[in-house]
Length: 228
Figure 1 (cartoon, rainbow, N blue to C red):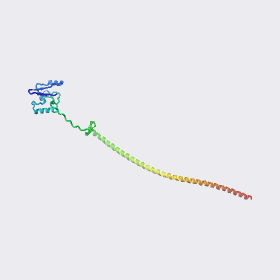
Figure 2 (figure 1 turned 180 degrees about the horizontal axis):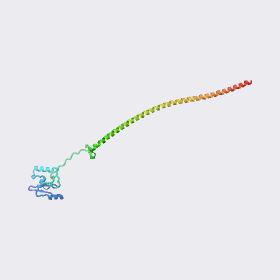
Figure 3 (figure 1 turned 90 degrees about the vertical axis):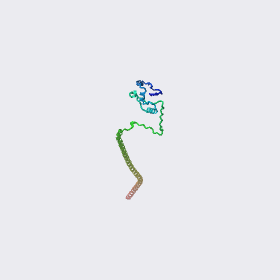
Figure 4 (figure 1 turned 180 degrees about the vertical axis):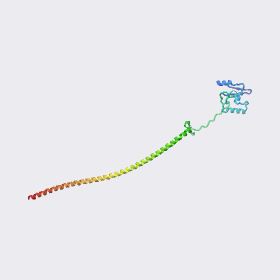
């Protein structure tokens, strides 16, 4: 609600608009208007002599962003607040818009959630966890190195064993070739011996037959000599 003071050349009168609110009507009815405009001017700090310096100073006070708490006779006994008064005749300055940064050049807004901000207590509580994490990482690295070394040694042993087995395989293959050739030679010798054996058997049979014939002839000759 705004109060307007109208001053004429001949007489000063205070025009108080009627309020539509029942609370304001009760307050307006409780205000004593017998003192004229003294209560209003004292409450508004309005200068009685409207000269240029006083008028400008009063307008500056009205334009200041402060709350006026008015009551009967300018006392703060009433329980309601009034917004800062302004003159409707004065043009209100338009606010100059601030230059908005380009969305392509400005960084995206960063939303900070209070629950995500670590408190000092949580930091203190998080120190053992950090040490435990470091110990776990150290143990994991040690186990990884140990497993890597064990795997390297196992691969070296496997390579050595494979090398020795390959050497044995080569040696056995060479021995097999030599024995195969030896078996072939022995088979050839066996065939020769078998042939010679057969020849010897035939010769023995022939000699036995000749011996038998010779013995028979000798017997016949001895019998003929005895008969003569």
